[in-house]
Amino acid sequence: MKIKGRGNNKGKAQGRILFSNEPISFLGGIDPETGKIVEEGHELKGEKVKDKILVFPKGKGSTVGSYVLYQLSKNNKEPSAIINSESEAIVAVGAIISSIPLIDKIDINKLPKKGMISVDSEEGTVKF
Ligand SMILES: C/C(=C\C(=O)O)CCOP(=O)(O)O
Image (cartoon, rainbow, N blue to C red):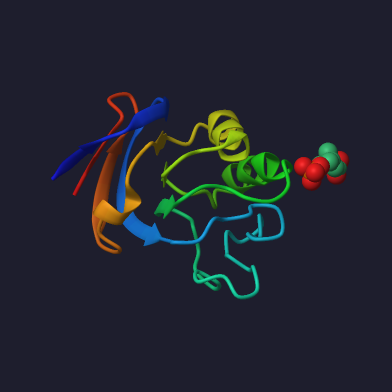
């Protein structure tokens, strides 16, 4: 199946889905050294974002989160792509400065919660 959204940063990626129903805070929520989700009580606590297609509704928390995404990419711990219901500025800026493909305006409830997925953020499409 192919779903069209809005491509925000050009690029293609394929990988395993890491799916969250909850927003993600990059500052304080993800360790930039390891790529591990560390936010207490978060449904993905303990998971690593590296090489995953990270699916979540939107970012939350500090604007410094954009820089944490950049730190993740500098440490080779970044997700391969991000899919959001609606990206806000923190995730959008972080993805752009880190060259991470990003697609939003996707009804993430229509996506599988696990398995492989392909992202083409030039077309603005996801395939699974
Ligand atoms: C740039 C900021 C802090 C710093 O330099 O460490 C302010 C961030 O403000 P938020 O309200 O957390 O976005």
